[in-house]
Length: 167
Picture 1 (cartoon, one colour):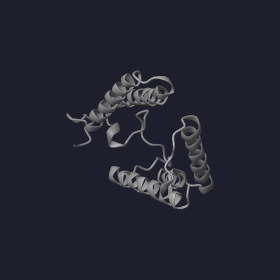
Picture 2 (cartoon, rainbow, N blue to C red):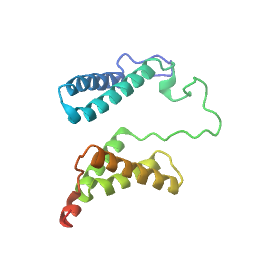
Picture 3 (spheres, rainbow, N blue to C red):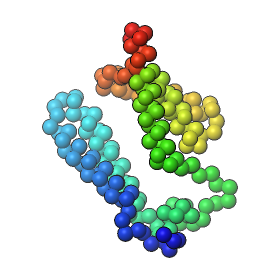
Picture 4 (cartoon, helix red, strand yellow):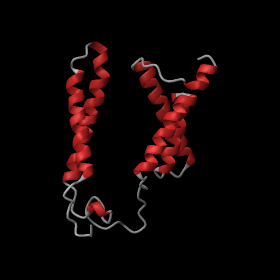
């Protein structure tokens, strides 16, 4: 396609976002069949997912012409001189990253794997200062572990190393 600004006849991202929104809507409706505390987390996740999907769909549908080419900002104007944009990670590298994260969870457990993955993700997405990356990774990991372990009483994977150490 050229730089005509016309949208393609078949937009895969639009189809994907519609599918995610539909899944979240069904997931939300199914969460009402659960009772007590078991219904709270699925309801929360599906409601947040539905809102975010709707927001992404609205942004995709209302995107100004030509924004798919990456030549303009959200306001429709050119990128300011010297502006630093967030680097884009190709989808296949992100899938490999997620597979590596899952393998790391199996080997060392949720806590250490999440700490490493969030540190790497922070660097991949453009965070330059190591102190800020470390603060982001540690804080996010601690919050996730407290939220799932303490608040939702969900056992987190300890990994092969944790099992060998007798956890």
